[in-house]
Length: 577
Ligand code: TEU
Image (cartoon, rainbow, N blue to C red; front, side):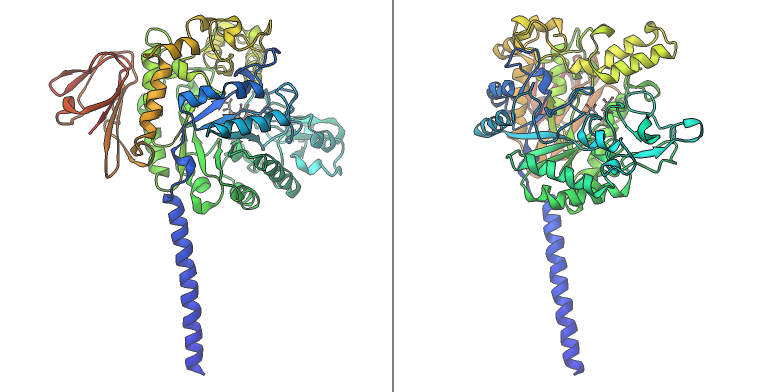
């Protein structure tokens, strides 16, 4: 009897051990197993400003379809399209009233199916933007929710009783200025909004909300899209309202809800998912994107966007700390490499133009735009090119009357209300406002830069379109556009840039970003002068002069004095050795 019991126990131990071993192998394998999306180069399309096919002054879905060959010629593998769902456009599409439809001004569901088909015909993949942490205040869910406390949709949002004297539940502020609470008269409560008051915060603790949003993701995935960019997805669970300075992105329930979304929907498709995750950084990003966490595939590294913001104010620019800039890339590599995947952006529809912010859009526009392309496409992490950066589009001269973006309009009004003079803050606002990145794509020198035949475009066209446009760039073999093309080919033909190790060889240098990408087959040295100065730099690499140069953003050979490079302003060189 005892012997049988012993065998039985041994049998069960061995079975469980095998199962555990298989699971461990499959999960570690998943970390190292290659996935289609690890080697892609992505491109963000801000649909409203990309190409207007109807003449109404705004970009649209068929406009993207008409320009798909452009992405093919550039070497793009994935396009991410910003929201085109029905919206009152308080936040230009990031305030949604119908998650399963297309706003008529952008086209129809049929147009979208055609775009997906045509995109796939060109072996390009397509990501859509899902805005799941808030809806529009005109969404039917919210129109019901605010009616009464016992309305079945009331729990879809966060309503809290007012404090004495009808004060908001706490002093949290919105990302778009002012309080994060708006009073709702019908129920004598406040509702939470992290952005504009027209973007009420969705309550993911409500199972019906999670079910609705899972259905939304499934609806679009079943149309054949290849992935999702999740807007502000780390914000889906609010900290306790007693937390004076709320720490977003750290609530454990976020993981549970993302696991549920992944289990019920995302995991059933071979897709790329990328989270925009305010509050998540290199020390905890792996908790969201490590394969065995079963949540998302990748995360955007946006820590650099907090650099150069005096007292944390995006609209009070100061020179950015370049050593900190480099440290951020090292931290994210150390925090994620071998555990999960990072996504690299230098700009997007929420930030100033990359050549204006990180480069030099005056004397060294071409050199610095090419240097930034070299940097973006040789870093570890999936690179995202933002619409127009591939031709060196720059910030645009606006007057406050021309503003279209709620973030800058609210900020402007708040400053004036607090008695500030325009002279005190307008310069900084103009330098960093989101409209800089949202001016219409500059295709050529015809009316409205070839973006639209409308008399008036939704946002002004940058007056420099006569000299900065796709047509000019495509025909000039030394253009920024053709440099991006070469850099994309270099990245994709050298897997070291995708899977290889990363090492900053001079982290304390306050002008030069020099790093090595290596694997068992190759080593590459990338040198980027992020300054407008001539700089001597000795990378301490023997016979560097004799090494093979893969790409260089100056027409002349690099200058040396012995083993020391005399780098030109914004000079970028990639050596292979
Ligand atoms: O942005 C979220 C976010 O982190 C914001 O702080 C944004 O980066 C801000 O503009 C920086 O100053 C996402 C979308 O990308 C943005 O366009 C939306 O306005 C926002 O969410 C609300 O949906």
